[in-house]
Image (tube, rainbow, N blue to C red; front, side, top):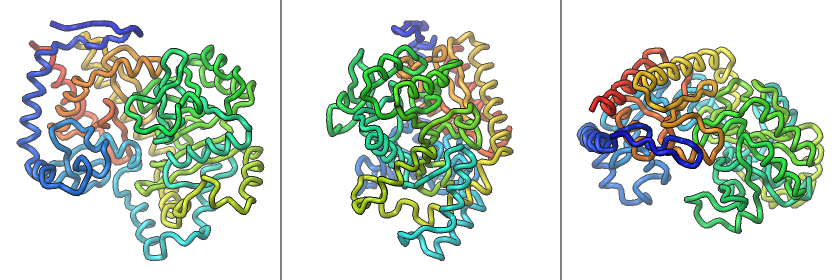
Length: 462
């Protein structure tokens, strides 16, 4: 019997799926997974030097009793050590959005390796990259980090120093990397640590205010306290799943932040999927600072943060101080020659308008295939698209991060991912999300649509 229980936000938590059928199907898929991956299973039992058996703990978030072990990745495909090939719709959770082992990026990185990787000196490539980022995003001055997480940390420091205000403002259930001030959620009017956050250095209520996405009244109330230095946002939420801004919301965010002297920082690390200049260009946003990472390195670690002209003058004055090397901003490898060569190659040969037009069309077709499958079975599901990225939900589209978090169905998530993996399709492990690159083809979309439709048939035929 299907369970259609509603939560407080009106989301259908049980998704119309019979839990007994789901449990039985999951057991079968686990058996299939184990049979397909004996070498990955052996690797999991023999690994002794890695905490939890993996280099990073989130690598255990994939479904199945043990992690798959990568052998090779190229274009839109990756292969594990058992020789099983996958259509990769995860793409390193955006880090490989250009496609794996992009030939021109590989050539540029290889050439730079022979010329030196890091010498604490600027390169011509760095200037080229700064100019190109300025052209794409409209912010004239740039500096670099090794990740978007670091870039966000640095941006928050500059915002507090320049405004003289202590607090950061973020959306409920946001994600901006492992930045202490942003690993938070709202509990009523209180700010608390996000579930799972380890060892927060201070009570997050001291550093951060939280507002609901798509709620301008909530934002106005938080901004009116007068203690907020900056608001750090994704133009659309992505890490809790894709939650799109309602018409007028982002314009209202810009108006309210200006009214209260709050610097607006836009994090385009995931939302670059909207186009060559991310949502900032596509939606004519006007941030004071912008942060990006992952994708622009084509697989090489890098982060970047840009400033408006007015803000850049103030930042420049701060960096003339002799203590800049202990300012809490930067890092020995930040802006290294290898990363700059990789970004230059990426922005020259990838992430171009024609590439986004192609990959966005594939994402649209993927969206249509998913929608047709659940609508045919009268399931109360939905699907959201942001450029070349799309994701399905087991409920109507959430409008806030809190509603998105409440709608998560871990059992059904795990089943849908494992079913796809067992049929050669890799989705982003934290979500039911697909990301497309210029190396994907329509046959990849059709493959996902077919296995998705088969999964729904198996879940609903009983």
